Image 1 (cartoon, rainbow, N blue to C red):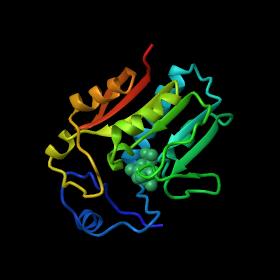
Image 2: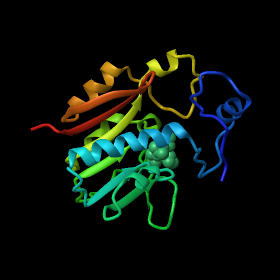
Image 3: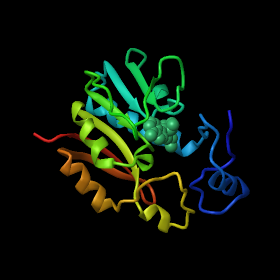
Image 4: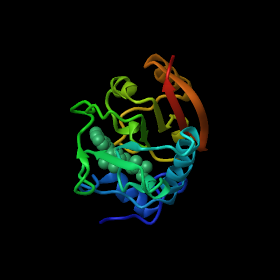
Length: 192
Ligand SMILES: C[S@@+](CC[C@H](N)C(=O)[O-])C[C@H]1O[C@@H](n2cnc3c(N)ncnc32)[C@H](O)[C@@H]1O
């Protein structure tokens, strides 16, 4: 397991950040990042609040190290999917190559993933199978805060453009907040 000492999103350049940006991360690489754990904790709080704690199952799209699972009830069936097998139960799927399977589950979470997706509207359309989705997105304002742009990210919508994409895909925005400069967390549900 490879880790870096600081977030790729740190505001000051460090050698770790430069190394990460200038060479491809090894397959299966997932950083240990306190900001991602914080993001998971906040997202889990929203999910449990919106379901009144009644969360039989959840799909974690681009699950990485599955950090949100630590904040969910023990009885919740946790379904992780990612393009890298994170454990024996991970549903392995490259979302730039194939569509999400149908899960028959009401809730999904997708944190820090859309930035890596070639066709964001197409993936958002596939989320219509869920009743509620909690997702994050780094808008292009993120880069204006002085962070070096990683070449592994495939898109950079403004907050306004991204919200328009959510609505065009048939979702209503239930909650939204900034997690830090340029990074937004949304809870969306299928529009009536
Ligand atoms: C920034 S990490 C976030 C991990 C986790 N959601 C979290 O918040 O801790 C992005 C995750 O998206 C996954 N990912 C990136 N591109 C993907 C793709 N094309 N298909 C499926 N998963 C992908 C990566 O493997 C990684 O686990």
